[in-house]
Image (cartoon, rainbow, N blue to C red; front, side, top):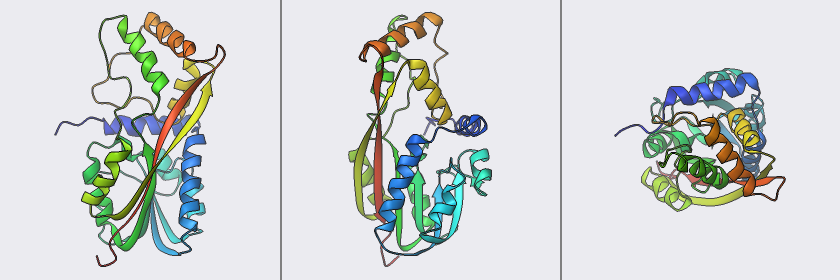
Length: 258
């Protein structure tokens, strides 16, 4: 199967964000939501795996509900800052039955083989373990996508400027196929307003969330960027444009008998 995403570039994008200072407002919203959901279960977990760790303080916060926390991140710098190790979620070799809690924050939407990644996580988990997390959904960044289409119209073509993403309705069946049970999936549509297309792109860069597709278009020409920026501004109120980040939250369990 041809690979959609370039994993080495994904790591470089996250390393760049780590060096320049990560923009955490979306990541923090997701992480805090996951912590609250886990705390409601009133259960102490023995060993947790945190996949996606742009904030080195997250493992310590997760330790409030888990005795041991292992951190992994696609970016070497994020991983090392959290005293963890890098990971490619569909190409690692986990030890079977290690974790009773896995928290996956914002990375599973950029793996080439999501079903395999989920099966590997399942393999690493103990019976009656909890997998909880979030990823970007298919309706993320509609204004940016529209602006890119306007830019592409100048050349009479279309190019993949933004990532394809999973639809919320498709995630629960994937979790079931990977061996999880009792999946719950819901959607949070986060609105953020921007004064320009450039400020949105800067935020995405600071999140490590710019294009990591293996087949990427060339950079926009100046004329194309001006067209995209104008289209983005025209979608707003004259001063700011509201962009939407669709966040798919999920929680699911491994069966209690294995």
